[in-house]
Length: 408
Image 1: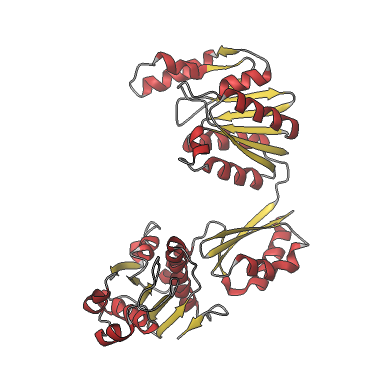
Image 2: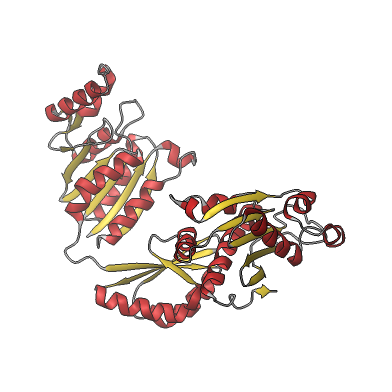
């Protein structure tokens, strides 16, 4: 089943709204065994929408459209669909009834302009919208199934999973697994997996400090064998699978040991603590944080040696070690994490931008590392968080540092 995705909206072209619909629908369609061959973005223009749809109809078995179904004048997907199908728009009685019921449930009168949402291309079927007011549209055009959904992500998701995906789902969807890796650059991840690439499709999804590796196989049995081989090739850079995130993995390891953690942060400014509190129930293993951004606060709040700070500055492996020990002692946790470094844009204490030291203090001592981070401020900070959490993971599992990473 070849499927194309068409997302409509000036806000997507202008970059004021991220096109998250295409990403989610593409992922779900692929997991269902469909072949997503193209994703196209067009603005709120009947001519542009019509042209993109006509092109998609020549290539695809099904087309999924999001956006342009609302009540305002710039919602033009209905008109484009009708034009391509060569039929007029007509008021659908069932869609109008649902629309009026939606406004009644919200204790509002139906504005006259809102009723245009019930105007569908003749011969189309409305798709119920359990979240919002605008109905979706199902229409067969030149033998190709076309589905039009609202652009609001919550509405598009609910309608897609309830009505569209079941109709497009292939008979024997492939088995898919995503392995999540930390701190190994994408080219090196690919190099390690080179022996597998001739056997199964492999997708690489790089993020700041991470690479997610997507493995696809024709059956669960084959996938298990492929995953086992991939883990052997990648080694302990693999920290989780599928929906696992590094913070969840770390919390899971801490909980299994009845342990707790606190953070002492300089260049990350609380990002590590923020990441550790993303997970519901994080309070059972995360106790708190000290954001000692100013150099003097590292001494006053965390007990870092003042002479060390005066002589070496705040960006130093021993400063990171003392920060981790200090926050562990002061907050009474099993482990302490520390981050210090230069995020830029200017050097600090004679250290170039990108110099970072992280530390994890625990019952068995303190481990310090200098991860490779990047060159721009946002990337350096994000990769530092990943590196700090991964160092804690390695400490908890008694794993060595990744090859090439300096440790003290």
